Length: 431
Image 1: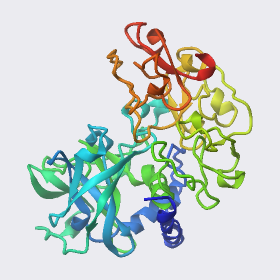
Image 2 (image 1 turned 180 degrees about the horizontal axis):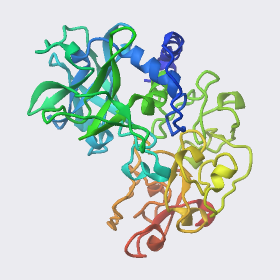
Image 3 (image 1 turned 30 degrees about the horizontal axis):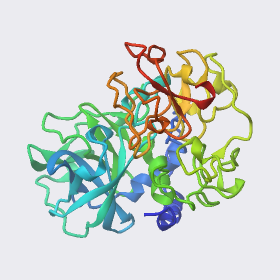
Image 4 (image 1 turned 60 degrees about the vertical axis):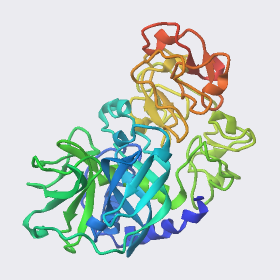
């Protein structure tokens, strides 16, 4: 599905935001994917009110249920067909999307065609600058699931509690439970919830619904992640609505029409045709697609200034944000757009080992970052290249690194590997 085919969601999101009930300012600082917290949370809850059970599915790998998932109706005002689902990132244990499928409450099955990770969904990125992770992935289905079938009957009345958690998988059966109190944002990790869940709670990927104090409708408060915590809607709404409205940027699926004046691109995204196709403060480069793994003749949005970096802590914050392959950042919000702050990979850009660097988030078709520092020689491959500061890559084949990055031999100790014999992807200027 192309970006233009999804453009209809932009007007829909705007209409929702316009009719949303205002909520008080929370004072929570911006995190990647968490822009406009107040307006976006209201819009999301309005968008997903209604038929709960018909919107929950079983998330399966090779035919076996491992988590729950939440269907996102293509027409979110009236329900109906769905080609998108939300689930937890930790439920995606295999990078091949074709091993996954989703089963609806009425028994309809759809295979997964594409998986998009939230920019800070990788577990090790969740604690840079005390920002909580967003344990969320958005999956595009290969076929449409009809959500108009009658929902399953619930055995107790919803009015008995304020919050309902619904699960598609508990001991192999459909289930739900009530929370014993209000769901509130966690004070430490802004994208999580503290949820007092009884022992018979639902499992990962299941939605947490809240009864609206205004309309009485049931609205999506968040997605259950693990015992006692979940992903708050305000932590993933902006990213989610942007992905639905404009498509999710994906270097493995080049789209020459991806950047438009209506769907502006961030740092490292393309193909753009003019500066008006880029977010404010960015310019449309010329034939710089190789930077991120797009075709050489693609134009990618970047800052107009030359590269600048420093090993001084907080440098990116002091210059109002770093662009791709610059540092030192302390938080994800120190990086432009949806770039992420990846810790302790400064050697890859010619800075100290402990410098944190702004990098592209994980894309479909790229390798999971080697957080365990596994020294296996086949971690980075041509089919699943590695990102900046990751290894082990093949120094005889730079295509095992993403985009213009190059594989530098025997530098593993600079990146936390137990041996220096590990080869790591670095910026081409420091190869």
